[in-house]
Image (cartoon, rainbow, N blue to C red; front, top):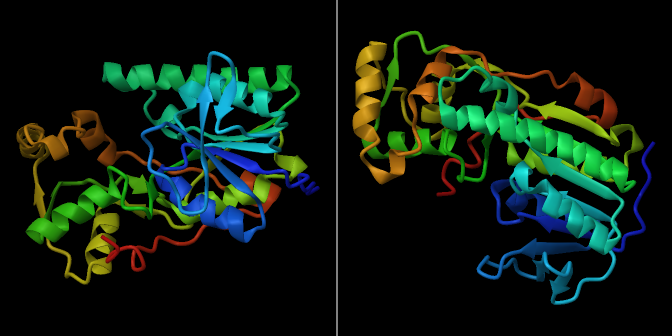
Length: 294
């Protein structure tokens, strides 16, 4: 059942994120009044006011009246702050984002990634408990590899390498499956579940509409850029050495050996629950409209 909120407004936390860039226009086109909750040094959006939340006294500057729904695009570990915002605004609905990395990084040898899994697990528990204790209907989305806003550290990074050098280096056998999800599909999912009671107090893994292996993904990126795929395949030991060298450059410091290891693993999910509950229909992998935007 779809139950429309009273339209007093929707507050978006983390609106400057890649999903936020797609979400704000969709909220407007759906007839919702959107309000941005951010930091003082955040860039504004044309026609959308930014409200600063003061945690100490739970107030907003400039003042913000009651809100029906809070959509959090911020990192899930700060969800307690988001719930406090919702309480202050009288909101009875929160939609938030986690990550399928909460599952794919289990067993990682990286202390950083182990900490990420623990933080995500605890944040999910906190989210459901806090919302249910305060009679707030919650929905959690866990996306797979996000693309479409030229702000990610996966597909956008591959695109930048191809643009600069005209080729891409991969280790032999890097054929783990991927299921990239476009920011537009995630924005549409937010709008779809706002008043849909079948999604209340549930978590959904959200993948894209097409599954391909890592090598196929890189080839599709070449094609989207109007280039013939030029892949250089090398042994994993050599690839690992090159990654170590690459990490000496600031733009590649985020790359870790665990990320290379996952090139050989399947990182996909099952969209059927989302399809059943709110008609989730993600597009096939399509970079054509995004390839020349940067």
